[in-house]
Length: 457
Image (cartoon, rainbow, N blue to C red; front, side, top):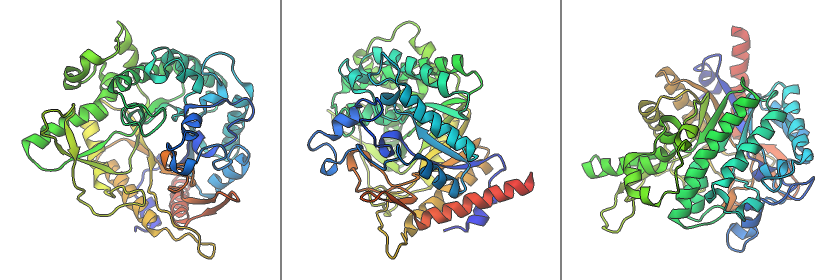
């Protein structure tokens, strides 16, 4: 692991270190102050969907421990906090009446950050679709895009004057493929037709939301957060190279091509064009909005090979063996160079604005021993990946910030509470927070960086 002082010295003065969370994973208070259920409330209460029936009903009780948690963020020395806003708190049915109590909570959160000198980066949608909208078809229904537009406008009108950044969506890949094709996340669909409909609705919703945000707060930097797949071909063969291109279009291009080029990928459309929902006259123009920034969430590479089966559906790839036999406790391969390769590929393919690493971290499930959580593998993971960020900046990539995932252990979706990504440990019985050794290392990095920044200024 790298010395935090030496690593901090590699970053320019306008860089930012931060931490990230998501509403459903930490807030709890699922039935309080006017909040109504989301698809994750319903999904997590369905038998067999989430590990041991865990849910976000209480989570980290952040809703009631807001000031304590903001003090915790400040104590880590970071400059910025990325969080998500819960749509079911703001417009509980997805459309219809606005819930002032929900807006009040985020007022307190944003004002609390400002009082502590912490910059705010809000994500409008981190997977908690109001359940009422699911009854109308959810993301597979075009009407959801317009409901999201109104939600974005409502939030920006109330909070946009005090936010430093805003993003429309977190991880379109998960919202579309993981949730509507593979059935692992809410709503648990396993349908290519539902997934294709959700994909176009989401892309349209993104464009409509960007327009709404700019109408309400023209100076507020707006972007999107993607978990583009870091695809690594199994071999140098022509077959695997072609497989890479197909997989890139399916996993990454189906979002970035319409958002940044105003078109869907050619091979993707050749495979699925006849099954796509109706693309109306101005849809692609609406989707193709200029962005002020974009975020990348990166954890692990996806090693792939050509699938020769004659019945394999596009993109016709299969999983390939990992190269680096180091894995986190959730079973993900550790490979920092794949982050660099992915970022460079994306800048080669697209005309992109400045970027942030909006999530990066590792799942290790160490528990306290004599009050200490010795999670050295996580510290090594963070160190290696932050060093890659410095390399990318040296190579000319306009990378402006890094957010560790996550501030604290939390509800890890289908894995429930058994998987821990936090740099702060949470005892879910007592809600006691304890900074892990990785958190102390990250604090030293952030404080050293800010001290150097202040000295330089």
